[in-house]
Image (cartoon, rainbow, N blue to C red; front, side, top):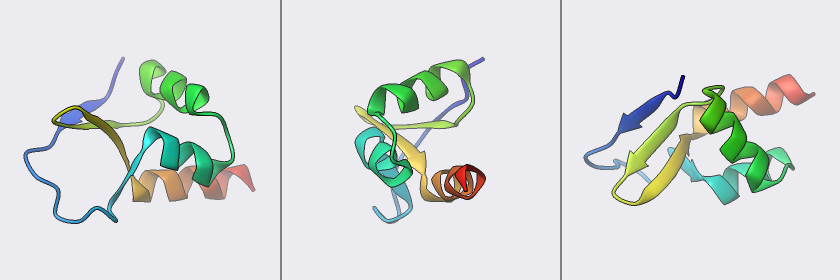
Amino acid sequence: MNRVKSLRHIASDTDFFTVDEAAQELSIKPTAIRNYLCWGKMTTYKFKTLTLLSREEVEAWKKRQK
């Protein structure tokens, strides 16, 4: 099940990562991030045409990798 939330505005660009930024932060390929989003393992935030991930969720995944 996909977890998708729509955003009407973004308060700060530091609250979210793009798919490529999240992949770089987690040291994995963007395809892996897209798979996680498709499988519902991460929450997708849509803003206009952008697919975003919350910084908080990416940081939580980063801690789990260690």
